[in-house]
Length: 116
Image (cartoon, rainbow, N blue to C red; front, side, top):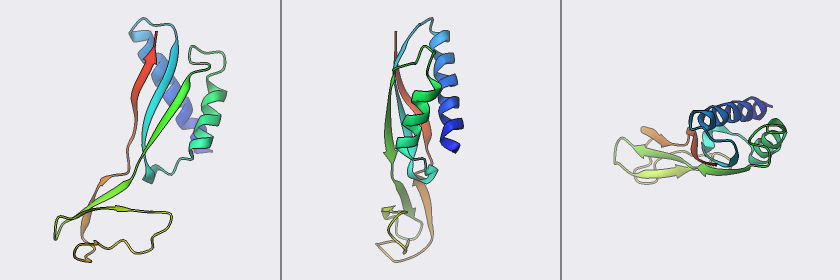
């Protein structure tokens, strides 16, 4: 149910940005969400449709780009993606080490917003 609070926050931020720019209608919002956030797209859309009723964003399209979990090995520099839903082993495919930094997968941001 954490999708409800997130979509409410997205709406409030979008409405605030709309008002700052002296606009009156939000047509679409594009989000970039890292896979580590573990939000379900269908629920984000469901709650977005619910919380936008009666607002300047009612009927707006919600576009979601999922950013994969990507690591960079500290030992060999190899960059690799991790499938959190299907892979048990998270070792570097280059050197099989376990010393790495996450370089993507935690994002949550409004990438673009179309409004008039």
